[in-house]
Length: 118
Image 1: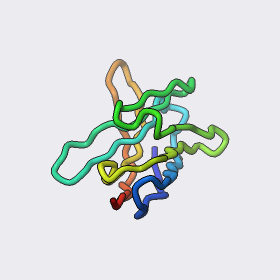
Image 2: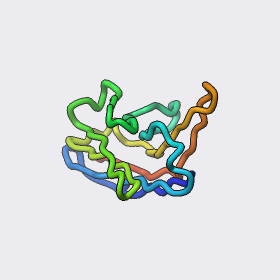
Image 3: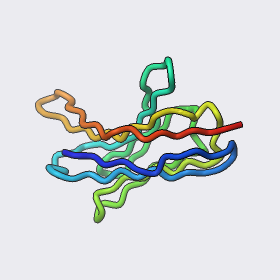
């Protein structure tokens, strides 16, 4: 599975960005896709996830502001980020995961930088 992320950039607080992540390869094996982020000096954290069935989950800090969605025809997952805050500044990583006999296997795209100025 290969993941190609795009859509990062520099915006001001309150503005919006949309991240995209296109999956290729053995995508039929994927169970969930999602976005993680890592700010300088901090651990990588999950931001949002979506299952093949369309169920979504979000970290509390982005609920009501971010929306994850997927276009199965395009093998693409999106993260719509509204009302961005400076604390959203981080490198965002696309993730795809599958389970093989109970073991989780993760795939990662290259990070895309999101910078929110105050």
